[in-house]
Amino acid sequence: MKNIVTLIALTLVTLTSFAQKTVDASDIMRDVKNGKAVEISNATINGVLDFTFMDDALSKLPTRKRWWNNGGTNTVEKQITNKVSFTNCTFKDDVLAYIPHEKSGYTFVANFEDVVVFKDCTFKEKAMFKYSDFERNTDFSGTKFNGVSTFKYAKFDRDISFKNTFFDEPSTFKYADFKEFVSFENSVFNESAIFKYTEFNNGVSFRNVKFEEDLNIKYTKVSGEFDIKGMDVAFDIDSKYTKINGRSFNKHLLKK
Image 1 (cartoon, one colour):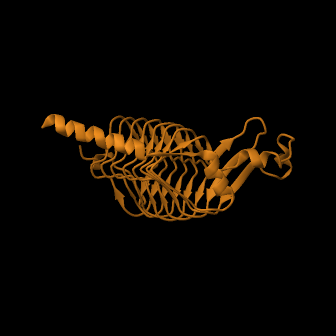
Image 2: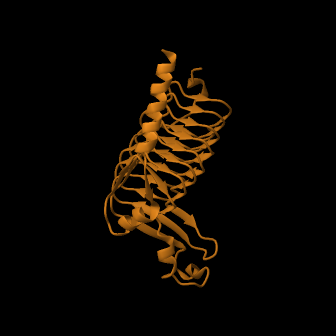
Image 3: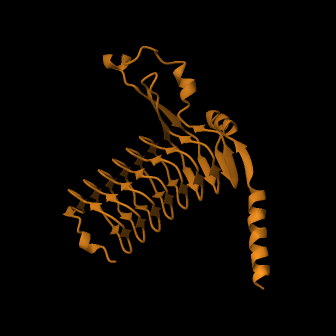
C-alpha cells in the first residue's frame, strides 16, 4: 500500500512538471509594450523581466551625468497601463520594476496602473519593486521570494495580499505605504524583515507569521486592525517610536 501511495505521488509530480510550459521574457515584454494584458498560468519564465524598459529609455535620455542638478530629476518612470497576471509561475531570472543604473546615474522605476497578480509564484532571483506605485488590486499571495526582494517606498492604493508568502532572503518594506488593509497571514520571513517607517492606513494582519530572525517595525504607523495572534519572532523586535492607533507597541501582546 505504501509503495502505491508513493507511486501516485511521483506520478502527480511528474504530470505537474510536464504541465509547466516555458515562456520567453522577451515575448511577455513585447506584449506589455504593445499594451496587451498579460495573463499567464503554470509556466516557467526564462529571461529577465524589465518592466522599466530601461534599454529603450536610455537611448532617449541626455548622456551628461547629473544633468538633473539644473532642475531635472534622475528618476525615469514607466507607466504600465495593462493588467499583469502570473499564477503558479516560476521566474528563473530577475523581475525588475526598479533599476539603479550606475553608469548613467539614472534610476528606472515601473508603476502599475492596472491589476497586478503574482499568485503562487516562485522568484528564483531578484524581485525588485522599490518605489513602484500599485494603483489597482495587487496579489502576491502564496508566492516564494527565493532571492533578494524589496518593496521599499512602494505604494499600494487598493486591495493587496501577501498571505502565505515566503521570503528566503532579507526583505524590506521600509517606507512602504498601504492605503487599504493588507494581510501577511501565515507568511514566513526566513531572515530579517524590515517594516521601518511603513504605514498601514487601514489595518494589517501578521496572524501566524513566523519571523525566523529580527523584526524591525521602528517608526511604523498602524491605523485600524492590528492582528498579531500567533505571530512568532525568533530574535529581536525593534519597535522604537512605533504607533498602533496612536499608542506604543507592546511586546507583551505577543503570546508564545
